[in-house]
Amino acid sequence: MPSRTSMPSRTSPPRLGRRGFLTLAGSAFLAAAGCAPQATNAAHSAPVGELPTGPPPAGTSLAVAVRTSQIQLAASGLDKNLPFKVSSWVNLNAGPDIIQGFRARSIDIASNAGIPPIQAEAIGVKARIVAVQERPKPTYTFATAPGSSLTTAADFKGKKIAFSQGQAQGVVVLRALKKAGIAHSDVQLVALPSTQFLTALQSKQVDVAPLGEPTLTKYLTQYGKDGARGIPTEVVDLLTVLWAPLEVLNDPAKAAAVRSYVTLWAQGVAWAWDNSDQWIDAYYVKDQGVAAADGRRIVDSLAKPRFPAKWDNAIAWEQETADLMAEGGFVPKIDAASLFDRRFEGLAAAAVPAGFREGA
Image (cartoon, rainbow, N blue to C red; front, side, top):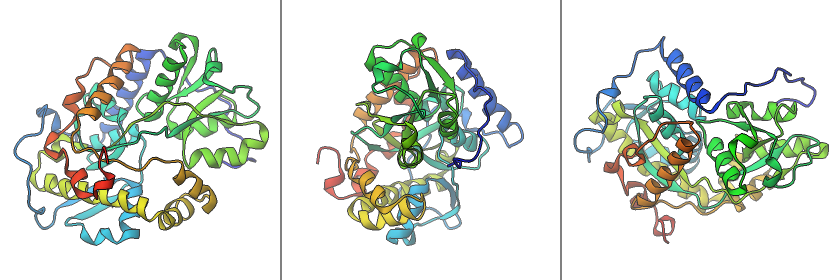
């Protein structure tokens, strides 16, 4: 996080029309992919062939962009059960970065919220969801700039709101505005990647931005005395998904590795919940640099992870999200069911104890 003594740039971030977000995102990904081998996964609109049931062949590797999973598997010892080589643990998590990594063939599987797969489909990057975790509690809080007088979402009218179309934070903004009865035209949506939200808040380039933990705690610890505050809402960002490029899923060896990883990913999440003290120390304290007490407060605020055996509810939620984006003119109409590779349905749920399954 930037030091209080540093001076963030005062250059105003871009304000784009709704269609402009999509154009900017597509252009950026195309430019980034221009110097890398072009993916051939667009040849198929759906995964082909039966899902392999055995272990992946010797020598199979995956580049995995799931930082929390890397720490969970190492801390729990589950990494010893990986039946394939992790060629790299890619330390990226923002949706636009993951999509760029898919295009450049530098990432084979990643974890994100539900919005990046919608954004990827909108710009022609073919990838599919292979595992689903549901989070029924809000995971983002709207942080205000220092000195702001905002206290509720109803105060957002006429304000500058940090908005990242291809990330979970973007749809959280849209859902919060809809719930508050505020039209898009009544606010200034400021186009920024979530990695720039902090700088924009600190320099008052935006009035408010959605932050997740532990970023929210770090920000309020530093700027709370200057009048920054968190505005909770009841907006839920329901889905955490694992997803992979279509060409990875059409490669039998890699598909077998993905199948194995799905089960270990879910087991790592369950381990973190059941061993929260170890998880807080390994992730929040040692990796994220927050105090143990703050780590405990964050973990205690979370809902127990749930892995649905059937994806119908997740697909309906994803369709609602896609429709909300389309209504705002950010993406074309998308059939959300096509974003899921249902060959993997239920694998994560079957890998964890019953108490972690949906409805338990």
